[in-house]
Each structure stands twice: as structure tokens, then as C-alpha cells.
Amino acid sequence: MPDPADPPPRFELAIAELDGILRELEDGTTTLEDALGRYERGVSLLRQCYGQLRDAEQRVKVLAAVTEDGTADLKPFDHVASIDAAKAAVRKPAKSSPGSGIPE
Image 1 (cartoon, one colour):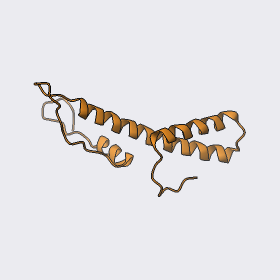
Image 2 (spheres, rainbow, N blue to C red; image 1 turned 135 degrees about the vertical axis):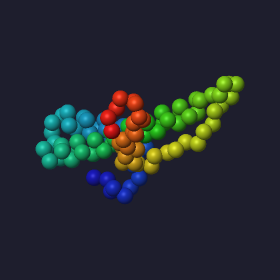
Image 3 (cartoon, one colour; image 1 turned 120 degrees about the horizontal axis):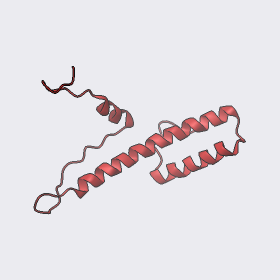
Image 4 (cartoon, one colour; image 1 turned 90 degrees about the vertical axis):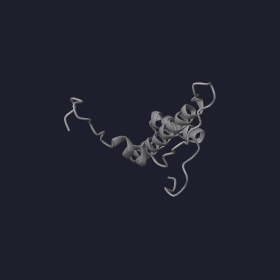
């Protein structure tokens, strides 16, 4: 099992490891305890990959933006360092405006 202090693997390596985990789980030769451990590792890798894909998508959106005159609309990119910080940002309740019909 990898050390939690180690940096996460690159996207391509994480996908390859996920593929290996899937094959191990599908062949049914692992013990229940080993299968649970591999499943947990797979979930962790999957979350990491989704986070990396979201970051890449955001970067593409920022890079692809153009102004009215057709030039690149360059804006600073706010990178979220961890999935927990991203989840916290998403979970912040939006303040409703008066008369919006949304109860507070």
C-alpha cells in the first residue's frame, strides 16, 4: 500500500493501476480482505483522476476563452490543491436574494 505522504501518481499511471486493480478484482483470486484493500485503493485513485480531469477541464476553459475582438481572454487560474478543498467550495450554501422564491 502506498505511503500517504507520497505525491499522487500521474494520471496515466493512476489509470494503469486502476486497470490492474479491476483485473485483480474481476479474476476473483484475491481474499476478501485483499479485495477490500484493493477496492479502497481504486476509489482513492478514481477520486484523484476525477480531480485531475476537472483541473484540466478548467484550464482548457480558461485557455480557450476569447474576448469580443477575438484575442485570448487571459485570467488567473485558481487551482484547488485538494479534493477536500474543492468539495468544501462546492458545499458552500448560496445566499438567496429577496423575492427569489427560495426560502432561507
